[in-house]
Image 1 (cartoon, rainbow, N blue to C red):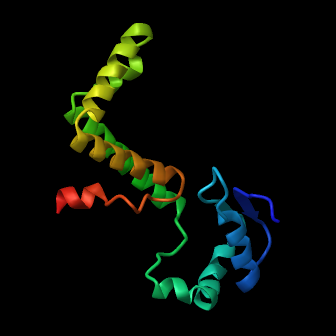
Image 2 (cartoon, helix red, strand yellow):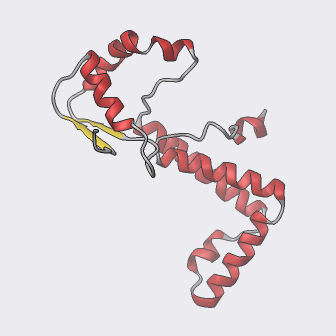
Length: 156
């Protein structure tokens, strides 16, 4: 059995089946591991579209999105998700800068008030958890697709 790999560094040319097998190894799910990270040093991902055309037709027919997520897009999405979390906390009366700057018992009191403000009401709790999962998805390279995108719902 192959060991669990979280990160694979591509430093030599690969195409077709070998490329798909390498990607599968990084993205194989294990306990405490949802996905992998692939670092492409030499531009191997240019060959990915050709490999996906050969081996990924079943995914396209099933409506599965491309497995490639560019870091720049994830950084922008993370910034938006954090802005949404800050806005949500502010609307709930949570003062994040005060919580960040407080120490000792003052920090504990502000934190407890924030937990109460964000999690006591079921509706607000669901909204907060959806926003937090979206931010987490940007960090783990796996947007949480089970939760609808709050921004689209709110702005629609």
